[in-house]
Length: 257
Image (cartoon, rainbow, N blue to C red; front, side, top):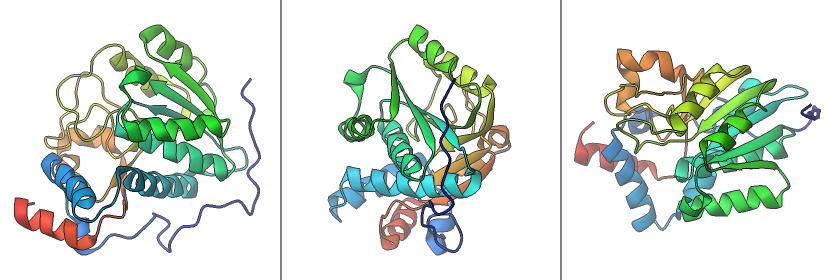
């Protein structure tokens, strides 16, 4: 039986008046394409000197605030499914902050640990040093075994695939996504984008997460407005990553909305 932990009444994550990390206005309220997302990240690092770890920390911390504000209760728990790319690193940051807010957290790393991006590896190392429950599942049998432990989890957090995804989800990740969709849960939260959804076209792949809430970074993605995306994105909230707003406006103005 999974052990739960009471969340003290005074244990909270700080939020602004909107409860959503930061309120977005002006150019940050428009929708971004895949190429624009990449350009924002590139310029934030190259021109402004913001490291990938800083951007990841900002993204994950603000996403955790939204999750906590939306779903916290006395014995809140989360199962956070992380890929080996930077989306998985965001998930590890979320895990840390929810743990610090009193949640019972389990982290699943779905994929070969040798293929983790450096920033994701750093955040997973911190998660393990903090003593959080971590399951490493590089193959299908291990991932299916992890699925069997989900029953009773309040919130499943999808941090498997990010904005760079297009095409089809390969096995065994496809089976993992279908298992997450079918699992007993209070809610499914997607980090930046529901895994398996193309952010430009809004088209689902052969296996796509069906989110109740999508916490997307910087701005919504153009594909979210497509009718085909509606069954997968759920409610959309935007979280800040700390990129200068002037940069967002420049990228939109240069590349077109």
